[in-house]
Image 1 (cartoon, rainbow, N blue to C red):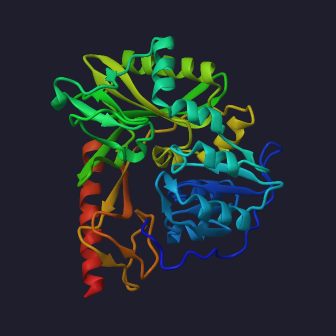
Image 2: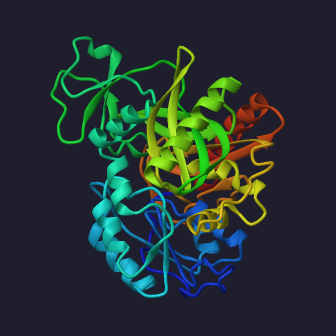
Length: 391
């Protein structure tokens, strides 16, 4: 997941033949980390081209071609991204699937969509759902509960957070300060406990819930709520699950959401209060993709084409993942052996800054406690192996 030593495209941009009438002949995937989407596509026999920030080994293995671009103030460097897209997937008979990295830049998605069919939600809906005034107005109109918000500094700042309309991955979320909210920044009352999410498929009219998840964060300087992983289990009652499911269905029918999406929420006195919608495939798809023989990317494409597939059995196995962050600046040695439960494997020679993501470890089993313990052990084992290889 670090910046790779080379930003050049690799291999050729051809794809496997289309697997269904509604699927594109060529597919471009754009995401901060494209690995999960590209690997899921490979399960359906597709070989997409991909653009992301890292160019990790497993992304390159599953894609027909990969280009890495630099970060920008709101996800990607716009010029680099558009140049890479023109090189790898010229406008024409090409589909586009986007993940993270464009939430705060719907105008960039508009440019990418010229001459390419977007398999997902369009720029207008992305803009609506990531503009706080419009988003919370929508929730109020639908009667969906959310934590109290305000645009002026609260009198009790210790109980509030400052957020932006694009708090992707926890970036843009901070502790409240006595300052006016600027632009798309607003104040939101802080609730105790873990954030949760629901991953779902939609076709613009109906929805299929894949599962409910608990989200984990870590605190870093300037980023006290940085997303760090998730487990496909959440401490919710049947009534709470039904309530969130009903909220999702209202949102789908009101907005026309399509494909893989997720909602983040928190439990507050028995009420699930919505935090945000991710109108795109989220990182939690990794918790369910192994349960789908053809992969979730295939179901995403089909749902965008109007065919909502059943998801029986998804989430039966307890599954979790965590990002491993570099404790200090380091260079990835060529001799490092990566276990099979490691993903987002950086290229040898990649330089990783202190506090930046090194890789992702995953675990699965029959109970949550054992799985979470395995994650902690594996994260520690990766760092120990890296130190040994670097000697």
